[in-house]
Image (cartoon, rainbow, N blue to C red; front, side, top):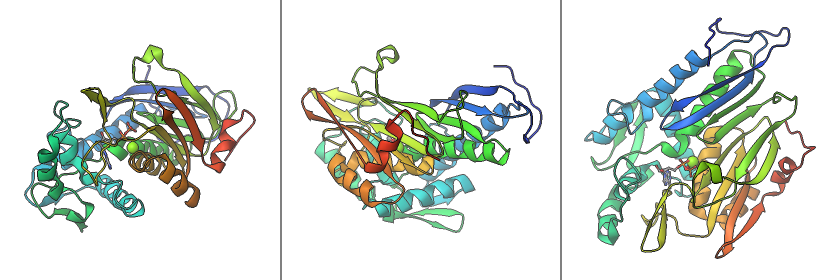
Length: 332
Ligand code: ADP
Ligand code: MG
């Protein structure tokens, strides 16, 4: 990728090519495509946003704000990115009756989906941890994150990728970009046209336990723009013990990885952080409850792939989702 730095805004002008940026950050991959009339390359600005995110909420960065808070006795200083993600996470917790809960960190670690190896902590292990789980055990007091017990820890991985997509999309909009596709670890924000002058085309993976990229098959292709979308699945990050599959989404009520027949859920809404949070919450709630939930909520559409009997996949989606499944649709 050749980097051309030409300044900070692009005004309307003559036609130029779309710009494609790719890279690695937040423990995942990103790809960004946009049309800028003056052909401006914003990769340096975008890398900067990624660095800010990592310094704020990467649990893998020993110097990050979240690491300091997790290691602390009673909390610590935050930055504005952290506060935005924290507030949105609390909001989604409330709306989902705590199915979404960023205080699952000690459970995520106990099951080895955090910074340590995969394992089953057993009922006793879980019982000893549950006292530290619950969004009511943390709060913001001004710029300080306060926690009730040293054992309370946060994990914002369920929304960090979505929020990163929003940050990049907002940045591009502020620079005057009107056509873009921002994707961070599979969570997307879309606007305007793709390079062919059509809505963006987004594939939903067919859930398969074999995660080899070459074997990936698509379940569906969406034609969609002006929206954000995120997919959560139990088929990518999991481990198998004694023939049983344990996925990386934790049910905060039981302390166990979610255990039902929902394999994948794709949520479409206006921001990627919300799509990302709802997708994780819906994985916890299961497809029947979630479908009902999504139909009731304004501005949330969802597409579920579940296993109706062993090996048999079925699909269900909200009424509003149908618009993106057809070739001729163009939604703004
Ligand atoms: P997916 O890759 O399936 O979209 P995400 O990466 O969005 O999933 O979120 C999964 C991560 O979220 C887990 O690895 C864990 O760190 C965290 N997590 C697990 N269960 C919950 C939960 N109930 N609420 C909030 N975060 C969770
Ligand atoms: Mg998520």
